[in-house]
Length: 305
Image (cartoon, rainbow, N blue to C red; front, side, top):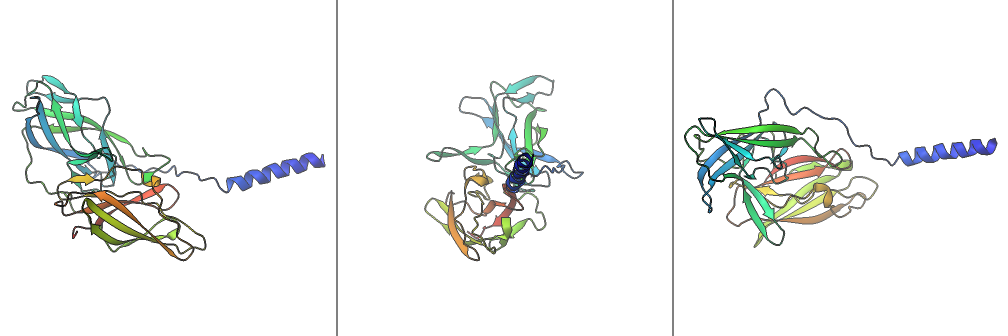
């Protein structure tokens, strides 16, 4: 009997000891559909023809969710062009979305980096409708989904919302300002800001340099703890005054900075391909904060570069 009791005690002790190292994901969710949220909105910026002679509609998308958000068209769902008489045409070519990136609230964009690392291309945002024309009174509807808030590795689709974008083709916008459509107080950080990461580590952008192919960022982490730690910020992209997000989307948990010894700092660099003539840039930064694999988003002003 004593042997059985001892085995039971050892089992419980080992279980409790193991549980001390289990990371429990946060199940809390917030409601992105606040009273002032309009979700995502879109504007037609140009109507023309593709090389194949199809109706081509250039579009700018704008984050009006009041939070950081990533958006994309629903896979397999064509856009719908509706004429004034109710006639509907399916538009199979749909390039709508943020390319996986989270965009700051109040920002708008018109394209992102796609392709491959060896052959990157700029994917503009547009819809094409084969054999159609944009007659007066035509409207375009696009099924999208989006997520808002911090990026949770364990639950990447927290706060997922489905929405239909409705565009009036009679209203073509011109002279839009990128990337900030509506300034939001205290949203933009200056480049010398110190950001608190997981375990109270301090992340600092210590240098930004233009290179032949883009930008190189030098980052520093200070570790105030008694144990060696590392920080995760991924490979941050940038968005400029042309409304394009430059940099392939990479989940921010995939790239780990060098380990900073206890009470000391570590430095590392990240790079992003950006044309030399693109100005007015902001870094779209995700920093692991609060707990493992939870990333808080920051917009960092590097427009002087």
